[in-house]
Length: 265
Image (cartoon, rainbow, N blue to C red; front, side, top):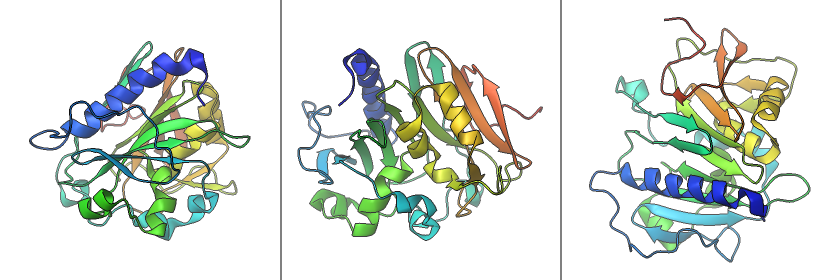
């Protein structure tokens, strides 16, 4: 469970996550306006529909083998991303004190979004995050019957979230021409798409998250989309980027879009 002093931060982030998840679709969200967004599913790994295109699920534990299963991670994308087709992304994140928000300006069509709870235990902090699943059909999501692969993968590819310590993290696209393959050869690999999961599970502060990422080998595996990350807590924020095989950190940025903050010009 989340500690009581973090409840207000959790609710602010959760409301923003639901809002941004819903409004990315043309025509908006047509679901029940009185749907209970904040009540956790009672049954672990059961998918519940909240409104059109929006679902929620809960995990009591995670299969950590997914961190190194790049073929499974590849299933996160069923099509070449819009960025790779030369079309523009425009995801943005902003932080101001206890407010942290992001949007998904993502060329994606009518794909399901999931709000994912992960319960805390002696290995990880409790957290909540949002993920877009391009390899799950609306029919599958409506039925609640996801494949075993997708059930394993879902919590690892959250694109943003907050944990019980008030640490928030999100990922945004940046061009492949600047980012490179790895940051710390010899250390344990951490694929770009699972960085948010790792931060939510392990970081007790934003500064701690940066320290943890410096100890990992951030790798562009599978080669799907180069990312950078904004990490924040109520005291400070950071943007973490991979440039020339080096982990670069910008302290206390106010916003992050789809441009590198650590590269002049």
